Image (cartoon, rainbow, N blue to C red; front, side):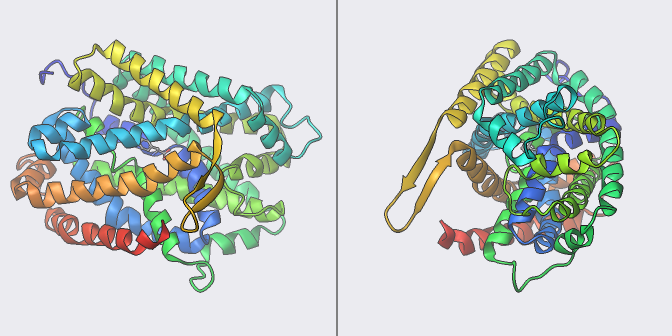
Amino acid sequence: MGEQSRASFGGKISAILVAAGSAIGLGSIWRFPYMAGEHGGAAFLLVYLLCVFVVGIPVMLAEFAVGRKTRLNAVGAYRSLSKRWKWVGYNGALAAMFISGYYYIVAGWSLEYLVSSLFGPLYTSADSFTAQFDAFQASPRQAVYTVIFILLTHMIIVRGVVKGIEKAAKVMMPALFVILIVMAVRVAFMPDAAEGYRFFLKPDFREAFSAQTIFTAIGQAFFSLSVGMGCMVTYASYFKRDNNLTTTAFSVSLLTLLVAILAGLVIFPAVFSAGLEPSEGASLIFVTLPEIFKGMPFAALWSAVFFILLTLASLTSTISFHEVLTAYFAEEHDLSRKNATRLTSALSVALCALTLAFRFDINLGEWFHIENISFFEIFDYTSANILMPLGGLFTCIFAAWYMKPEFLRGELTNYGQLRGRAFPLLRFTLRYITPLLLIYIFVCNLGLF
Ligand code: PFF
């Protein structure tokens, strides 16, 4: 596609808004507390913070550079710079497919909770929130909400990436911060809140720390920042040539971090106050948050506002991984945008159906045995913990070793327009620190499989 005909995002703020719209979503509000709850609370938070700075931000910058330089979809971008590296783009497209196979389902949960807050039975039923969550998972409504979510995403993508996301992100993000802050203040007054703060903020490395903590925290950093899978490559292909990539990457990452920390400050005091377990798993926020709202005046209303925002935050994320595949099909396989969008949506429906329909055991003898697993866990684990870190590792090697230094310097300084003071540090990090850390973690964790 020619430079002129390719859509581009408005200006500086739009670039930050759309990229933050992709990053901020279920990853920070649903997945982060659930992973932190399962992997040691404060110790997890600390490692996650470190990963965002040492791995997430450098990889995001490298992806921005690849995307804006080439102005192509993830596969096309790597291919146009070097044929041999195009598989990094394919790795990303595969991760986008895996994420599509379960993310819409969780987004559908948020939609269900929105409707159920407003029209019952979330706050009118005598059943516990855990029982209600289980009942919802067993009902066909789950599939219906999943499909509705895919359709919503489809409709926005058909109209083009620019307007839909910019608009949604502009309203949603400030509102999301406000409601999270209100909730954080509210939970501070719940009984036994202090125990939650201790769990989330006071690291205990002796008890709750293992190689698995680091592995999971790195995966969470990739997932929550939408890096390592070509999403930021695709989005940066719509950035303007005068956008400052460094400020954009820092702003996006800091905003995402803030949302994740706020989510933790809301969830954990509430978990302990309600006598629940932080290691509850994927249902954590869906049983904990209603407990908070229940004690507030106008419970259903607060709850509805929160789930509208969570739905919107999820939508700006689903749009972004849908766009990775749509742009790939359209540009690499010469489909019209409309058909590429249809193909991606149909694929998403098929993958989610697979996830919702099957549960099975994996039995590889004594070495490896898991019972009653679904594609939900498989898609989540392989995308966040394997494909995305792998994509991130090779993006570093590509941008900082394979390409000439002028490539990164050029993109990060806008070819001499910006001073680029952070450039030497960034290049050093991308050449040595990030890849070595990722390789080390992969090697250490080989024993875990
Ligand atoms: N970062 C999104 C979230 O935290 O919800 C999830 C995501 C979006 C991952 C887009 C990857 C991606 F390409």
